[in-house]
Amino acid sequence: MEYKQPEAAGEQPTPRHLRSAGQQMRSQLLDSAVPLFRARGLAAVSVSEIAKAAGAFPNQITYYFGSKDAMFVEAACREMLHVAQQAERRAGRARSLKGYKDALIQEVMGGDTLAFFIEALALGQRQPSLAPQIARTVDRLHREGARAFEQAMTSRRWRTIDSAATVAQRFWALVIGVALRSAAMGASTTDSINEVRALLNLGVVARSAPSNPLQLIKKA
Amino acid sequence: MEYKQPEAAGEQPTPRHLRSAGQQMRSQLLDSAVPLFRARGLAAVSVSEIAKAAGAFPNQITYYFGSKDAMFVEAACREMLHVAQQAERRAGRARSLKGYKDALIQEVMGGDTLAFFIEALALGQRQPSLAPQIARTVDRLHREGARAFEQAMTSRRWRTIDSAATVAQRFWALVIGVALRSAAMGASTTDSINEVRALLNLGVVARSAPSNPLQLIKKA
Image (cartoon, helix red, strand yellow):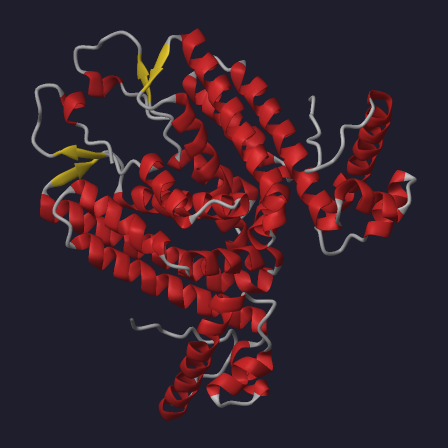
């Protein structure tokens, strides 16, 4: 997935050849950090470990990301966007509405990326400097989710009660709410997935005008 | 609100007069801790500060709660249950469906208790020993929410598409998801409230059989 790196505020534009070398190093550092963060969480991973795994120096992490926390948030955002894109692609191939919904939920909630992203959200809640990165990511999750949903509905001639934007926003809020709360209760990923399946209503209706519309509402 | 204190696992039953003295001390410690936790969060408040505010000794906190983290979770759970009960009472007095929904959202999201509870959830996610307390609280929020919703619907002769249990569970998941994500993005409480208003659909339908049911679905 293409992940465009935002420029730091107030930074001078970098010449193209330097920028791409810098972007490559950023990517390399993120790639090395992700498995460490996933396995042990933010607190148990040190900057020097990440640097060592990437074949870099610790001060390069400060240079490129500002702090370990900011790096953690950027890594989690990148991974979440990637998983969302995979989920949209997988769901896009489903034939039935049930298949569509199940694929979406399974892909987004099945791995450990969502927990990683939720830890980043919790971090952002305490550190306002991390908010812009999270806001950009959430906007993109909503926007791209709405676009994919719209496309899936149009191509199948399904009609929805709410706008695609509302459906996408509601999907992400529900998924984040259930995942955080289930994990805090000690519930399994399977429990969370089943719960979201039961709670999520995409509000899809048959396109052609039925004689008794209520009977044709597909609950999904 | 009556808050029944669960017995610690494997503990011998305590004689009644001792138990109530102990419960009184627990309550007193929690009452002193809540404003400190609310104002400054978990990390910035020390055990000795809480003890001092309660006129107690630091080791009494360890004795009654096990740890500062466990005390934080218990305080947040108690406050959340209290706010939920207030919200149900306030919403119960509303005449219209819109009034009902608005009161519920405003009461639950308007203060700082939800953020307090979400911090407890994030803590529970990392510390499995805190999960049982959180699980009991969530079960109670769902159960009491469902009961209050059921009652509100029955007394007004409103009919719902989903069960009261589903509606209550969905309400809490959505509220938690939006609140965590909005705070992480640097959005205001008003933004979160407006978002939940737009996303939450209680699925209430008129009770009497209409000629064209779709037109009578009240979106709320």
